[in-house]
Amino acid sequence: MKAKESLKKTDFSLTDVISIYDFSKADILSVLKRAKEIEAMTEEKKSKLLEGKTVASMFFEPSTRTRLSFETAIQNLGGKVIGFSDARVTSAKKGESFSDTIKVMSNYADILVMRHPLSGTARLAAEVSSKPVLNGGDGPNQHPTQTLLDLYTIQKFVGKLENLKIGFVGDLKYGRTVHSLAAALTHFNACQHYISPPSLKMPKHIKEEVEEKCKIKETEELEKFIPEVDVLYMTRIQKERFPDELEYNKVKDAYVLTKAMLKNAKKEMKVMHPLPRVNEIATDVDETEHAIYFQQTASGIPVREALLDILSRVKK
Amino acid sequence: MNKKEVIKKLQKRVTPIGNGTAIDHIQPGLGLRIVEILGLDPKHAAAIALNTESRKMKRKDLILMENRFLNEDELNKIKLLAKNATVNTIKNYKVVKKETLGLPEKAEGILKCINPICITNHEEIKTKFSIKKNPLKAKCFYCETTMSENEIKRYIKK
Ligand SMILES: [Zn+2]
Image (cartoon, rainbow over all chains, first blue to last red; front, side, top):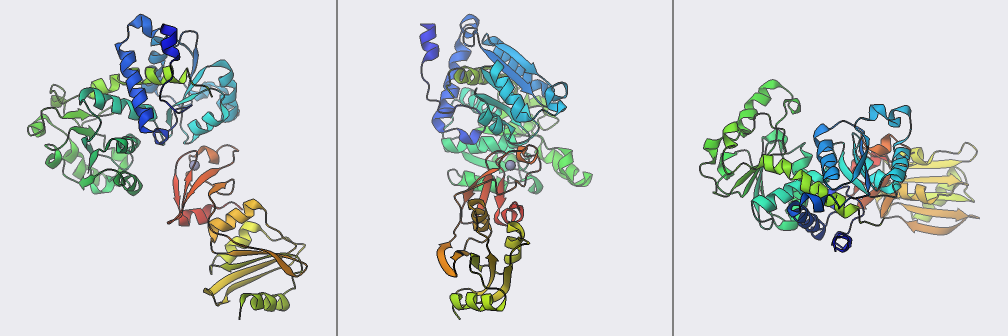
């Protein structure tokens, strides 16, 4: 019966997980549904899902957080991990082309999980690999598992994905996390508020894309929108993004969320953050019912488990 | 003066083209860029008319190339650069094929990605872009960077 269940077809239409832009609404929902199912399973049942399967974990650049999350997920599902955590120790530095490394690894593994400093590597890997590829970040381009875990967290803790009012706060110009989430939420009729200093506004091409399907508002003031939103998605404002320190000092404190600022928030409003944070959320917010950023990080495990489970059944 | 007369006149003035290609109705200023992209064959003649009078578009550039025929990649490059151009294939002093270009549906192997950290700029692979019209945009299949019309024009491969 277990075998039958694990062979059952899903609504998932993709053969690789490369970019959130490849996902239809049905694809997203099928991943979230599977994550929920897996999260409810016993350890024992879970550990059968990748039984006898090998997953290559290929980190061409180090990213301990993402790698541990993937490798924990693989082990929870009973899969075997092979791979490397730093390209410096692999053939990649000896001049072997990226395509060749991928082709070789796809002979050894059933699924390839990868992270690479160059953009477009995950798409190329999917093209040359005979096995499904799961993108754990290709340079500053895509990191689809982050977006899916954000959506899973919203669904789980806010209770809905449709017709959400969400405020994105901080660095909206360079943050790929917010770009991807904003795009993904267009499937769910979200009303989006972009709250940032003028120099770190949401890029025009993202706004145009979102605006085709969703209402958006832009502002520089954080407090004004707090009572309106269901979710406040905070991001880090990095000093390196500013031409000078004065400019940075002017804005850095304007986007720090404190407990006091939450007094007019909706009772069920949730505060998210992709972590790590520096000072953009005061620690006194942690103790409130609004804070879900630690649960958000933890959602990475069931979501990555769901993707691995789904990809293990994909025929390429 | 109509186009044929212009061509005839140019042919007389510079070199008669019995066989070859005439690229006409090029937006003024793009003629030299097209020549640069196509390259000149040292064994054969070519004539380039810049900012010449045109009935249809007031001013235009025009290129005549003897014994030179364009392949699909070259045609697509010109489409990206000068979508309103007309390409005439001349054989035995007759225009045997006349093609009004328009934009290509996609661009494969003819455009370089503007993103310096795109894998296509680090490994020998054919670039691929999807093309959006009005305004012209090209999106890299690999790194998902979108290039504007001006960027596209600067990044067409030679
Ligand atoms: Zn690219």
